[in-house]
Length: 420
Image 1 (cartoon, rainbow, N blue to C red):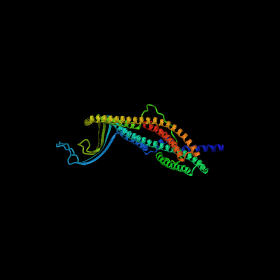
Image 2 (image 1 turned 135 degrees about the vertical axis):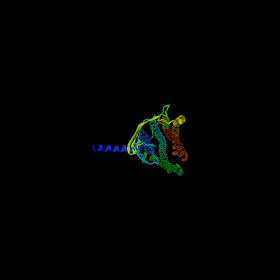
Image 3 (image 1 turned 120 degrees about the vertical axis):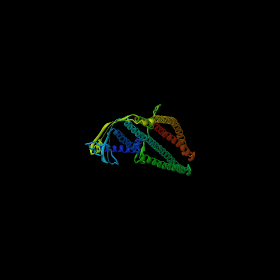
Image 4 (image 1 turned 45 degrees about the vertical axis):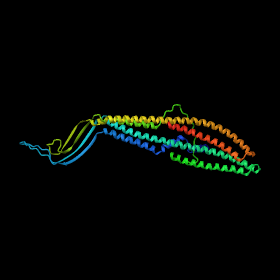
């Protein structure tokens, strides 16, 4: 049981380390999105929207103002007549008042709801702008990821060339010792081997630089042990629906314009509210009573701002023109996106055909190189002749590698361009 437990733990640790050192492109997309500073801004915008809209709706609460004042007047109201047996106190020139003014909206012509909708639409536009920026982030991750995959394939191919050259060096050294070939033939292959090692250093340095950039985007420490998994090929339907955040942004902008239009409509509608004013002062509502006392006024108020009618027609036309502008921007975006998708489809078809040709060329080059290897072993061709064939095969294999990675990258570019 103890052995089984230890073995299980080793397997778990091995699986954990394996998963830690391997990354897929989808994982990179998700980690980059979570780590990107603008993603945190989305949460801030959402919280701001909640608070802003809540404040707008609070306009339905009773609006309370408290006012206090003390004044001294140069003159006061008085009666210019006297009555026998009746004394009317003259009002004091110093007057005091403290009162509360309470207003309760009972009908606002949907002004408050329109303002709330306007604030929601404004902040939704900000949210969609962040989503558009996150698409650019995805494109950056995509480019770096496939650049690393290309370097990895080139390093693998470079190792194969080193192996071929190393095998040739051993055979030529034996042939040199037997007096079959000159030492210069051996040195030529060794020089080529050193060039291949130099290229390995260059590729390793490039990979390290790209990994550092990818690590910054996904907020992880990546090193030479990190392996990026080659994604599976992606298939597409003949009719791909475009689902880009730019379309959501344009839709949010159109919704914003509609809310602005509703707010304009609400401004020309009559309003009604209840009001109450009560307080303590001297004099009160009875101007003939020159002492401190309580007072209040309550009622209903109707208002209708006719001046808003002056600009209503122009405001409506401005909003209609703004919506037409958004529609034009949407049509332009869809046109340009479809052009890009068609171009990428054509690129996919071309790359698939080129890979088929690459495979045929590689088979031919392998056959030619095997024949050259045999001739070099027999001393019937020079090292230069052999290297020419070796480089030709390497070039064919490099072309296939490039086209293979380009095919996968174009497929993922297509996914990003279409938003799927």
